[in-house]
Amino acid sequence: MTRTRIAAIVLISAIALLAAGLAGAGTSGKASTSSSKVNLAVSGSVTFDGIWTAGEATAFGKVISAFNKVYPKVHINYKPVGNNVPTVLATAIAGGRPPDMADIAQPGYIKQLAQQGHLKPITYARATMAANFAPSWLQLGTFVGKLYALPFKVSNKSLYWYNVPAFKTAGVKPPKTWAQLTAAAKTLKASGTPAYSLCGASGWTLTDMFENIYLRTFGLAKYNQLSAHKIKWTDASVGTALKTMGQVVGDSSNISGGSSGALQTDFPTCVTDAFGTPSKGAIVFEADFVAGAITSATKAKPGTDFNTAPFPAITPGPDASAVEIGGDSLVTFRDTPAIRAFVKFLATAPAAAAWAKVGGFATGNHNLSTAVYPNAIDKANQTLVASAKAVVFDMSDEQPASFGGTTGQGEWGLFQKFIQAPTNVSGIQKQLEAAAVAAYKKGK
Image (cartoon, rainbow, N blue to C red; front, side):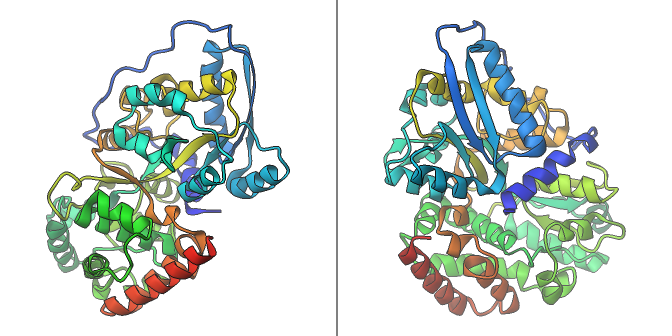
């Protein structure tokens, strides 16, 4: 099971426990309204292979029901296949029988399918998407020069979560900048609670931390260049970001369990450590799905026991509040009136609202009203995602899996080595570059 799917399932399972919420969430965007007229002119069926299972599949069923209120003569045949989507699709394509549509969480795989000519462009949905999403979101769906994907559901990875009582005891406020973070970490340690609870045994959490630091230090353009390996991992910018990261992972005495303990602590154990009683660490760096991990495994209450804030800003400028996402993007293998109708509907606020009412859903659709959400955590997170001026995909998800997404090797394994030797910046850079070259050469 991948990190994206673990996260989503944990979040969905915790929705019922989030009746209370974090203070300070407002309502943004236009009210989501139902599409007005029933369309009987479009008919047919659409086969859809998706990553969503269990509660997520049920939530997507509500989206389909909303669509059928407008297009009652179009039948959506949704098949939940979970993490096996790439394998299932590869087999189906090889046999000449791919589904009409699919939900893919790996942008690198979407690019591969587009380059191989297997996908159909969805340029017919551009106007609808442009009316509901900022230009950066359309760019996320653009591969090899054409619009191929709709980023329908996303996870906000540019967050940290903090233990409210620990912060109150230390007398510190949620840091907004990296300088404030390092200062708060020292105060937290002096008050008796280690600042950080790291999930080092789950290598992907370390890549997420590095990616947020790199994005907030060097901005969108350079982040995209490194994602595509257009600049080397031996570049000076990578060294700078690693040194910044070292201020956290290298501060062994201020990490729950120390560096060695962090490497033996997986996700979500690091979350339980931070928000259980007693707390073993005050801060967890990870995505919006941490809320589900907290509420499903501890007695902590939102607002009084835990809260969240945007990943600290590092370099001032337009990309200081950029958001890194893990995304579920919808693609098409055929082009029919029924498919076009469904794709365009999925780009609207009513489609997003159908899932948002259940909870555990974020989207770049700025016309979705946060009033439809069942709790304040989802409302606050949606506001951050929809209002982001710059949005990027998780860097490691864009790279060959052997480098960006495999346990114990590539980035995951090398960032774990970095925890063990945080001063060996140039050495880790060289190892990262060698691993990247080998992975890109293999193309997987």
